[in-house]
Length: 126
Image (cartoon, rainbow, N blue to C red; front, side):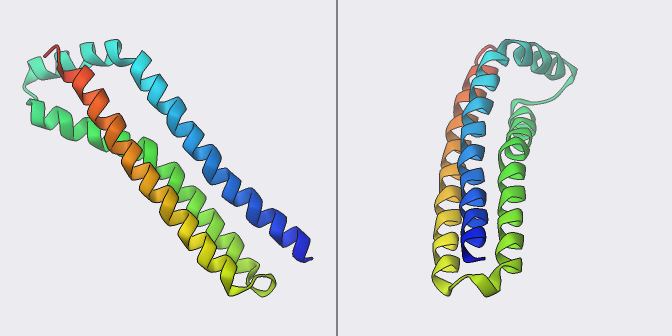
């Protein structure tokens, strides 16, 4: 039974790693679709949206794309750990908290890098 619990734990931690791979896919998608987005936001700017408002909208969109999957995976991991609490020692909880914290810091850092790069390319023509 402990082996099954450990396999579930490893599987959910691996899901966080795969989510960070999804972050890199998101980055490349945004970089390839930036020309179409430029045209869209240029049209919106002509209607009366300021650069500051465009930055705010883009930041919110990117935050949703980045942090909703991370939050969902973290909630799933917490649920699994809750249901398997009798099979795990407290060291698993500590390592999980450290792992999630490290991933969160990586996600926040990559979010700001992606945001800066994307906004630079998106607003440079405007």
